[in-house]
Length: 341
Ligand SMILES: *Cc1c(COP(=O)(O)O)cnc(C)c1O
Image (cartoon, rainbow, N blue to C red):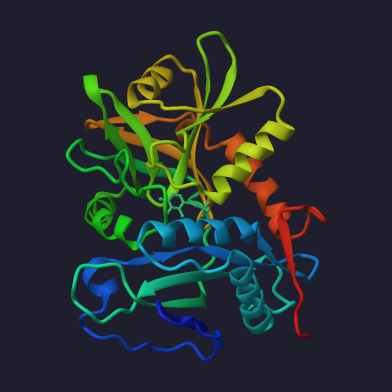
């Protein structure tokens, strides 16, 4: 792993590359008491052409800055963070992702915590940056599709003006109770709704992934719809942005719409047979089609529940995967990592 420490008086010390292992903190450490923590998640891919790649890592480095800023952690240069990612990738990549195993990946978790041991509720004066890899079992989207449970009105993930738009640990701990209950009832994830005035229930995200629908409008147009980034509700997913970019570029007959939309619109579209697909997208689980959503005790079935197919989600997943694993050569979004043989 790579670690670097910071103090308000001396700034950042030189980062160290060392074996993965425990770190030492005082019980009063700011991150333990006040959740002063932020993180990133991206992957290192072993391509079918034998090369190692990151996917748009500069976007993760920028988002990491935004997250750190929001939770009173110090800034860490985006370009320096990218250098550290590259060093760690060049060190661990050849060992854990051998050339003989193309199509595999490692998950990278840049993390920053406030280590300040003073118990006062205040802006931390000490912090630590950590970067390490994690071997995740290869994940294959359930071929039958995800089953989502719409959240109850009394539990929200994020709220206007809050911090749902940044990757803070503080967003995830409080979601685990609902997630655990959903899992115990056979659902894959929670679909997070946000109650608004007039009883509207806006659709925001699903688990730790962005959420999309493809539907036909009453006028017969095909739209790809996802929640907009304003209001600090929605995490600005790298996968989200990439899918929107790809559809705008490659699918002329699908209009990309970033707007507030609510559960009633989904219920109506399903009822009128206009809903083509729903899917979730994020680094951890790629693009995963949804087969049903349980809302207010009723099951809303997506066409996939009958047909077993989700052509848009499948096509988008393949496009991304071709870029990440180098089947599509020289794409701007693929960031090549030079290995030390
Ligand atoms: C990380 C995350 C995403 C997906 O972001 P990617 O950059 O695509 O991995 C979406 N929503 C939430 C809440 C997340 O934490």
